[in-house]
Image 1 (tube, helix red, strand yellow):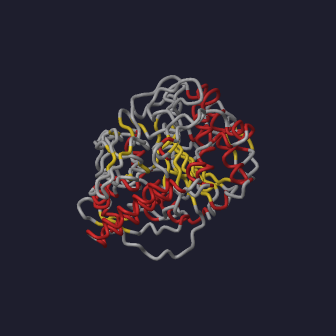
Image 2: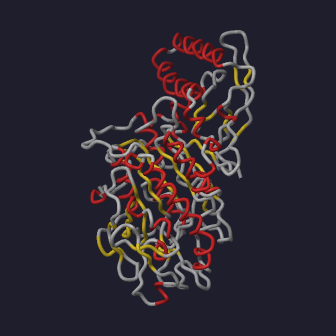
Image 3: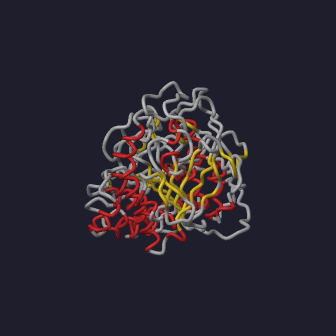
Length: 501
């Protein structure tokens, strides 16, 4: 499996002013075309000086974003950054977030509810550390969506990641290969509408890619907006030193020498086509140089700068250290960080810290012994750390799966459930949301007595995405044009959940 990566390769300089070029090996993102780049951030060719048409082609590829109709935002942003913790595979909402102690045994399950530091909020007993941080977060217990096609992961993931119905999916709801015809992910929209300041990364994906079946990267790219707004990905295991070659210049090239070449390239392009060249230079070269010259983005990936106590607090797991990395990236000015649980959405759950949440069987021992202890430690550490550093007020944290699990144990909704298992359940589930202006310590919405359907204040996934944009000061009614030049809103439908603020 290959990932969208920063690829550092050999740089060849020639003395003639218009005869320097870059050669590199090909890299692939899922089923997208290969890329020949020296250094890529979210699909941008940063130092493609020897490819005189390459950046212009990328600018044209991103051209639909130039058609974005910006609307006046009627309220100031309450959040400066977002950390999306995506629990692919989907944990059981009734066992973690929405216990039903008065329901029959075949619904309430094996876990008892425990009190939290937020009055009236109860959690499942498998989340004691999060219960101690409940004064910092809010639960939405009335998430729900009518599934498109069958009740499978793929279409639900696409809806959550893009804010649009999965019209390109088959009636089975199974994932299809990512394509440049896809609509953009939430992170890509944020990168387009609220890019980071110079020297920072706008959209970073860590821990692992979104995976469903054999497809990798479902709903995670910029799609039709072009590779300039794809995520910068770091999927190396952060429990080990991360490879940062992508940020390094080749050994024989100094920064001064690089800057002189960039200045020369800009002058050549300006003489040839001043307007377009200037726009291309400003958009791509300056962003590239800002990253190379700035220490903020590079230093964010140096987890060894953290104390052992802090790293232990988050947990020495792939997920734990990825959440710590997310905090460091936000500190360094990153606008949107997606931490994706490392197991594939439909993997069979296995022991250990990195297994799947897709508990079609053995739900309770899997959650008690393997999933929840690691998640509880890391998620509570992230929230507490952000609060302790004064960052939570301006950082919106969202933890969610693509749907919930069936309230009744052992009942199949997809013809795939075993003893003690809970099947897919998109009609009702829960979401943790914190910071970024959200009032903490509350429960928004309510499910029915079996946690099967929203009872009050239903929240569609599109409403949640609209709320993220609302917190960032992005008007969700902003329009862009798709590959057929049809106008589209950032979110297909939905309203911000103002009761959270």
